[in-house]
Image (cartoon, rainbow, N blue to C red; front, side):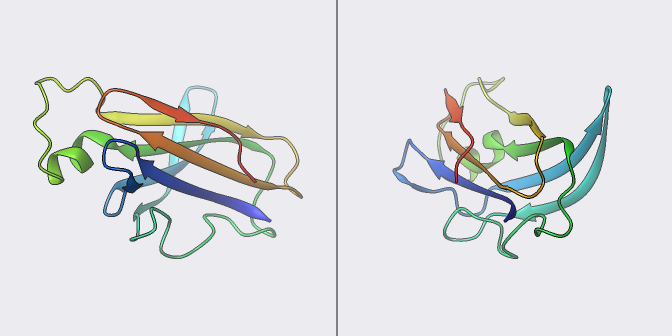
Length: 117
């Protein structure tokens, strides 16, 4: 239970190790930073869950991923400005007793997400 994320680099076919990410709580037009983290070798938060079962609350959240910085660090030649820079995923938690997994599949030109398990 809780909140987790996982990022896969679809250009290279591997986890997005080293990508910078941030978690925010949101309300109205405001976002409040909860934590910044760097994805581990498996493309996940190295500390495990972003929120454990007891800490996750119903509400709205944002996960932000530094896609441009990640692909530049991998040596990918990007145009300026890059097509994707920060990818922000705004999502809601309706039932905090359930697990919310928010994966991101990303390349320099596209991304996809879904509610995982």
